Image: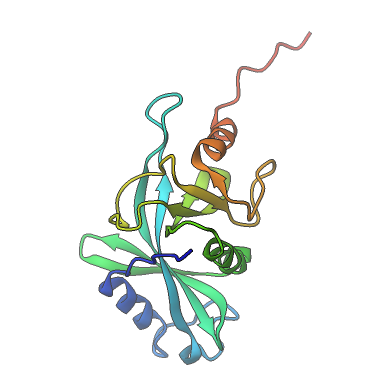
Length: 192
């Protein structure tokens, strides 16, 4: 299978390159070391999961930015995110942590799947969860749409308890697991 990685907006990439410029204030450790050797790679549209309009309906998603892995010597060591502002695409922040290696791992996994997909990232902040969203419509506008029935979601590690990381799942299988975790707790039982 091949992943059809959509091109990032040129202004988003320029904002990341500007943030990596040596004149920019310090980066978080260890990204600040030899920042000239950092190159943006694997741009992925970053969407936030929106609540489903009704029970049983598939949720929608909203584009919130683009995430670029930052490579040094061919190895991802961090990420840079951009966001859409009233003036266009702007650098938002740098990221480190386990999602960097997990992103690389699940992208390699996705490349071995038999079908073609457009890779995106889907954030579920309420669960502290990030997934690789493999969108089945490879020609779709990467800024629009929500997870569809033919799409796969691959939770990045660390995933919330009860949700397997690095395992591709159909949307209709994973969304109910996430919805259960997102549902408000019922009223507390009276104490006798």
